[in-house]
Image 1 (spheres, rainbow, N blue to C red):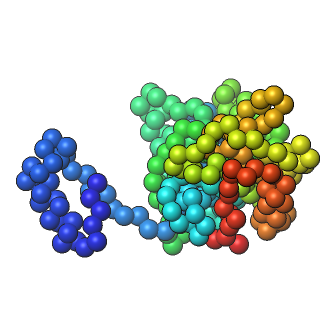
Image 2: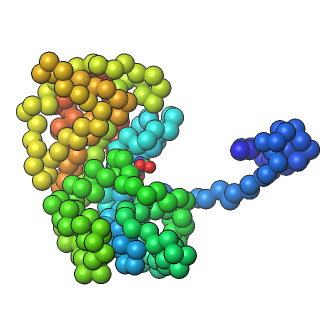
Image 3: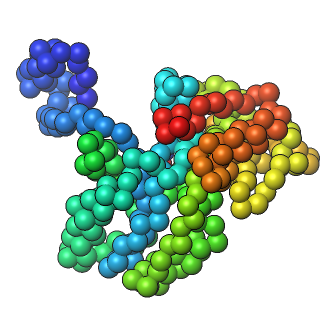
Length: 268
Ligand code: GLY
């Protein structure tokens, strides 16, 4: 990968590469356009024939507030993604998702399962950055909060090839999740530190602490990973969901953990 400040610098590096400076590693050169815009995650279920959108989200990949510092798996997320308007969703379906699914079926390898399209949206036009065949983390947490129990019916319909008759019943709501991570993440961090304050937290269709990297030892919850807990809440507005999520975060007593305090800042 060549990242250069000027075109001249990039050209000089490419000259070196074609000149053999990188040996075998430089035998093939891929030049990619730098995509500008706002990134969003779009989730669809596919049963090999039919495709059903099940939600949009945006995550915060940088460890630091204001989206600064090293990349992580995701320090928080919210759903829906404001940039994914009905028009953008329709374009993504008609220009990206459906043609991909149709071509896979044509090739005799129909795709069945969850498809996570990472999109870049600029001036109302979505472009595909990548496909993942899994839910996102922490996007999954906000999607599950919004879908509730119907998630099971949708996955069941997907597995049995019945998506043509499946519908998502959307509430006009918002969900937001805050990741609590071990201090030091995404670098090295301590394991086995004790987390307190979880017992009194609400657990209902508006509030949920998802455990991502914990275990129970001698009656105590301890941290076993980098990203450890997801304080997730649902509300009538994104602000309400955010306030509820941070109210849960503030009840957690974990001196060895940290979180970003600005999840959702762009959308808000
Ligand atoms: N949060 C990004 C991902 O799951 O790939």
